[in-house]
Length: 153
Image (cartoon, rainbow, N blue to C red; front, side, top):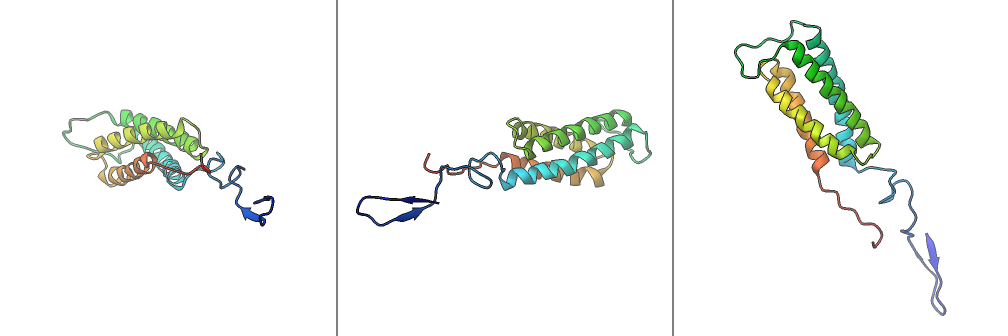
Protein backbone atom coordinates (compact mmCIF):
# COMPACT_ATOMS: atom_id res chain seq x y z
CA UNK A 1 0.00 0.00 0.00
CA UNK A 2 1.26 3.46 -0.78
CA UNK A 3 0.03 6.77 0.49
CA UNK A 4 -0.67 9.61 -1.90
CA UNK A 5 -0.02 13.09 -0.59
CA UNK A 6 -1.39 16.12 -2.37
CA UNK A 7 -1.05 19.68 -1.37
CA UNK A 8 -4.25 20.62 0.40
CA UNK A 9 -5.81 17.15 0.01
CA UNK A 10 -6.40 14.45 2.57
CA UNK A 11 -4.10 11.46 2.66
CA UNK A 12 -5.49 8.56 0.65
CA UNK A 13 -4.30 5.00 0.72
CA UNK A 14 -4.52 3.05 -2.52
CA UNK A 15 -3.23 -0.36 -3.45
CA UNK A 16 0.21 -0.36 -5.06
CA UNK A 17 -0.14 -2.29 -8.31
CA UNK A 18 3.40 -1.74 -9.51
CA UNK A 19 5.16 -4.15 -7.18
CA UNK A 20 5.36 -7.74 -8.21
CA UNK A 21 5.44 -10.60 -5.80
CA UNK A 22 3.83 -13.95 -5.03
CA UNK A 23 0.20 -14.07 -5.98
CA UNK A 24 0.13 -10.81 -7.93
CA UNK A 25 -0.79 -10.70 -11.62
CA UNK A 26 2.26 -10.75 -13.83
CA UNK A 27 4.58 -11.85 -11.05
CA UNK A 28 5.82 -14.89 -12.95
CA UNK A 29 5.93 -16.71 -9.63
CA UNK A 30 2.49 -18.28 -9.85
CA UNK A 31 0.49 -19.92 -12.60
CA UNK A 32 -3.24 -19.86 -13.03
CA UNK A 33 -5.46 -22.61 -11.69
CA UNK A 34 -6.20 -24.17 -15.09
CA UNK A 35 -2.50 -24.52 -15.87
CA UNK A 36 -1.72 -26.03 -12.49
CA UNK A 37 -4.65 -28.46 -12.92
CA UNK A 38 -3.34 -29.46 -16.35
CA UNK A 39 0.17 -29.91 -14.99
CA UNK A 40 -1.05 -32.12 -12.17
CA UNK A 41 -3.14 -34.19 -14.58
CA UNK A 42 -0.10 -34.60 -16.87
CA UNK A 43 1.96 -35.67 -13.87
CA UNK A 44 -0.76 -38.24 -13.15
CA UNK A 45 -1.30 -39.43 -16.72
CA UNK A 46 2.41 -39.61 -17.56
CA UNK A 47 3.44 -42.20 -14.95
CA UNK A 48 0.31 -44.23 -15.70
CA UNK A 49 1.28 -44.30 -19.38
CA UNK A 50 4.82 -45.25 -18.41
CA UNK A 51 3.48 -48.18 -16.39
CA UNK A 52 1.25 -49.21 -19.29
CA UNK A 53 4.23 -49.01 -21.62
CA UNK A 54 6.37 -51.11 -19.30
CA UNK A 55 3.61 -53.73 -19.23
CA UNK A 56 3.52 -53.83 -23.03
CA UNK A 57 7.30 -53.97 -23.36
CA UNK A 58 7.45 -56.86 -20.88
CA UNK A 59 5.04 -58.71 -23.20
CA UNK A 60 2.48 -59.09 -20.47
CA UNK A 61 -0.67 -61.04 -21.37
CA UNK A 62 -2.83 -58.14 -20.23
CA UNK A 63 -3.60 -56.94 -23.76
CA UNK A 64 -5.35 -58.73 -26.58
CA UNK A 65 -7.21 -57.63 -29.68
CA UNK A 66 -8.71 -59.36 -32.65
CA UNK A 67 -8.71 -57.95 -36.18
CA UNK A 68 -7.98 -54.27 -35.89
CA UNK A 69 -6.76 -51.65 -38.36
CA UNK A 70 -4.15 -50.16 -36.00
CA UNK A 71 -2.78 -53.48 -34.85
CA UNK A 72 0.82 -53.17 -33.73
CA UNK A 73 3.03 -55.54 -31.88
CA UNK A 74 2.39 -55.14 -28.16
CA UNK A 75 6.03 -54.25 -27.64
CA UNK A 76 5.56 -51.37 -30.10
CA UNK A 77 2.50 -50.20 -28.17
CA UNK A 78 4.56 -50.45 -25.00
CA UNK A 79 7.26 -48.18 -26.40
CA UNK A 80 4.64 -45.73 -27.70
CA UNK A 81 3.04 -45.48 -24.26
CA UNK A 82 6.42 -45.22 -22.56
CA UNK A 83 7.62 -42.36 -24.76
CA UNK A 84 4.32 -40.48 -24.45
CA UNK A 85 4.33 -41.00 -20.68
CA UNK A 86 7.82 -39.54 -20.35
CA UNK A 87 6.81 -36.62 -22.59
CA UNK A 88 3.72 -36.00 -20.43
CA UNK A 89 5.84 -35.91 -17.28
CA UNK A 90 8.38 -33.51 -18.83
CA UNK A 91 5.73 -31.15 -20.21
CA UNK A 92 3.76 -31.38 -16.96
CA UNK A 93 6.84 -30.20 -15.09
CA UNK A 94 7.29 -27.47 -17.72
CA UNK A 95 3.74 -26.21 -17.22
CA UNK A 96 4.02 -26.47 -13.43
CA UNK A 97 7.22 -24.41 -13.40
CA UNK A 98 5.65 -21.92 -15.87
CA UNK A 99 8.17 -22.46 -18.67
CA UNK A 100 7.45 -20.64 -21.93
CA UNK A 101 7.34 -23.88 -23.92
CA UNK A 102 5.21 -25.77 -21.38
CA UNK A 103 1.69 -24.97 -22.52
CA UNK A 104 2.33 -25.46 -26.24
CA UNK A 105 4.24 -28.68 -25.71
CA UNK A 106 1.58 -29.83 -23.25
CA UNK A 107 -1.17 -29.33 -25.82
CA UNK A 108 0.83 -31.23 -28.45
CA UNK A 109 1.71 -34.15 -26.17
CA UNK A 110 -1.80 -34.41 -24.71
CA UNK A 111 -3.22 -34.40 -28.25
CA UNK A 112 -0.86 -37.15 -29.34
CA UNK A 113 -1.69 -39.11 -26.20
CA UNK A 114 -5.40 -38.72 -26.91
CA UNK A 115 -5.01 -40.10 -30.43
CA UNK A 116 -2.86 -43.04 -29.32
CA UNK A 117 -5.26 -43.88 -26.49
CA UNK A 118 -8.11 -43.86 -29.02
CA UNK A 119 -6.15 -46.27 -31.21
CA UNK A 120 -5.50 -48.42 -28.12
CA UNK A 121 -9.20 -48.82 -27.15
CA UNK A 122 -9.63 -52.33 -28.66
CA UNK A 123 -6.65 -53.63 -26.68
CA UNK A 124 -7.71 -52.39 -23.25
CA UNK A 125 -10.84 -50.17 -23.21
CA UNK A 126 -11.05 -50.00 -19.41
CA UNK A 127 -7.68 -48.25 -19.48
CA UNK A 128 -7.88 -46.24 -22.70
CA UNK A 129 -11.21 -44.50 -22.09
CA UNK A 130 -10.27 -42.99 -18.68
CA UNK A 131 -6.86 -42.03 -20.12
CA UNK A 132 -8.64 -40.30 -23.01
CA UNK A 133 -10.76 -38.43 -20.47
CA UNK A 134 -7.62 -37.24 -18.67
CA UNK A 135 -6.14 -36.11 -21.99
CA UNK A 136 -9.30 -34.17 -22.85
CA UNK A 137 -9.26 -32.45 -19.45
CA UNK A 138 -5.59 -31.55 -19.98
CA UNK A 139 -6.35 -30.12 -23.44
CA UNK A 140 -9.29 -28.13 -22.09
CA UNK A 141 -7.27 -26.67 -19.24
CA UNK A 142 -4.27 -25.76 -21.40
CA UNK A 143 -6.27 -24.17 -24.21
CA UNK A 144 -8.42 -21.95 -22.01
CA UNK A 145 -7.92 -18.28 -22.70
CA UNK A 146 -6.47 -16.62 -19.61
CA UNK A 147 -7.02 -12.88 -19.44
CA UNK A 148 -5.63 -10.93 -16.53
CA UNK A 149 -5.34 -7.27 -15.76
CA UNK A 150 -1.89 -5.90 -15.24
CA UNK A 151 -2.43 -2.79 -13.13
CA UNK A 152 -3.58 -0.41 -15.86
CA UNK A 153 -1.15 -1.52 -18.55
